[in-house]
Structures are given as structure tokens and as C-alpha cells.
Image (tube, rainbow, N blue to C red):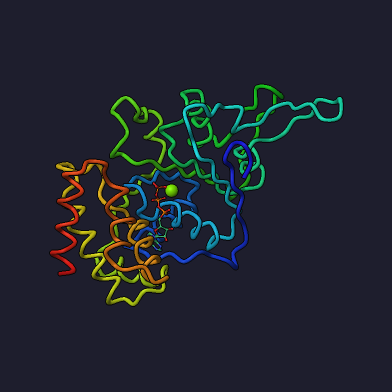
Length: 270
Ligand SMILES: Nc1ncnc2c1ncn2[C@@H]1O[C@H](COP(=O)(O)OP(=O)(O)OP(=O)(O)O)[C@@H](O)[C@H]1O
Ligand SMILES: [Mg+2]
């Protein structure tokens, strides 16, 4: 990790575990084979980041992940001149490195990025596949294998913070959601070490909590949080404590709503 929240991962051998929900792996591979950029949409903690890490490893490509925020500038992605030992040297940003190496560049929460960032992406995400670097006068052609992947959560961002049609219509888009209950129970069990039967009970509760989205809750409980609860239980925490800490408290600060959610726990776990 550096100051720009960039993470480089690589190597096919250590493909992180990912349980497919449908045809998403085949679609990603087809997009990759056709040099098409991919946009992943879906709620928090449903597996988008894990999916990209898994696919990058499976395709044997290095992966540059950039967590976008509203202060992220085009220079953070492309690179800048830095002073090193009295000399000014050009240092590639993560996007430029990915373009040169034929790697996957993953822009997480892309809607958070500033407008000048999306402009940079345009010539890279159509059939030109070029990255103009104004500061050095270079015009880089993306190496074979370069792929741009972006993700965002359409739920909680406000309407103003959505992508322009001219940007979003440059991507093949895939919608993610929480896995079907049997798959989610397997994921929770495998990630936490809890038995599948007990994981299934947590997933049932998650389903009930998710049904409250939009009424009492802004976002339904994520797969990530269900795994947290399961992990706490595995280390010996009483079930109710674990559920409250991992699946109730993170969802809301409202005391009445919390009480209502805890009642649901009693319904599921009796
Ligand atoms: N299909 C899956 N296979 C394996 N693990 C999964 C799957 N879906 C979710 N997970 C688990 O859920 C956790 C959260 O997923 P991930 O971090 O990929 O969410 P995300 O969609 O990127 O969320 P955010 O929008 O908050 O970044 C992962 O660490 C992993 O343990
Ligand atoms: Mg993520």
C-alpha cells in the first residue's frame, strides 16, 4: 500500500477463493479476451473485490487496485515528476504501470473519483486503448492484457455522484448481489471455519435483515459481516454477542431499530 491506497498483487498460484454465483467468471473472461473494460455494480461486501482478485490470479495478470476518493487526481493514477536526490524523475502511477505491463487496473468506488479522472479513462476504454500522458508528451498504447475494471455501489451514493453516460457506456457491466442462501452459507463456512449448518442459520438471519433495506436500514447486512459474526463464534464468542456486534451494531445507530433487529435474532435463533 502507498499513500494513494494502491495495492499490487500478482501470481496465478495464490488465486483467492471465490465461489461463483452464476456466469460471472465466463463473462469476465470473455470481456478480457475481447479487451473490454468491465464495470461491477453491487452492494457493499457482496464479493466484488474478491471476484476481481480471483479473476486476475486465474488469468495470470498482475492486479493494481486503487481505492478512489474525491481527492484522487489524474496525476495520482498516471504519475508525476518527483524530486529524487536533486533530480526530477518521472514516476508512473498505478494506471500507467498497468497499461505498460498489460495488467488489470481495478478502480474501486470509481464514482468517488474526480471528473478529471474519468476523462483520462475515456481513450483507454474505447477501441483506441491509449493513455496520453500530457506531462511527458507520451502516448502509451495499452499492452496486450491490459484491462480496466471499475466498481461502485449504486445504493448509497447520491444521484449526483453517478457516472456520466459517456463513461458508463464504455464498460461491459455486471450486477452483483448477495449470493443465494446455500452458496452464501458455504462461503461463510469456508471463510470462517464455522459448520455449514450454523452458517446457514446466520445466512437466514441475514436474509431477514436484508428484507428491511429501504424501510429501516440503508443497506442490508453484507456477506462480509456475516463472515465476521461466524468468525467471532468460531473463536468462542456467544452467538447473541457475536451477532449483535457483527450483524446489528454496524447497521444502525437508532436504538428502536436496533431493538427491532434484536427481536428478529430471537425469532431466528429462538
Ligand atoms: N462469491 C464469494 N466467494 C468467496 N468469498 C466471498 C464471495 N462473496 C463474498 N465473499 C466474502 O465476502 C467478503 C467481502 O467481499 P468483498 O470485499 O469482495 O466485497 P465488495 O463487494 O468488494 O465490497 P465493497 O463494495 O464494500 O468493497 C470477502 O472478503 C469474502 O470473504
Ligand atoms: Mg471492495
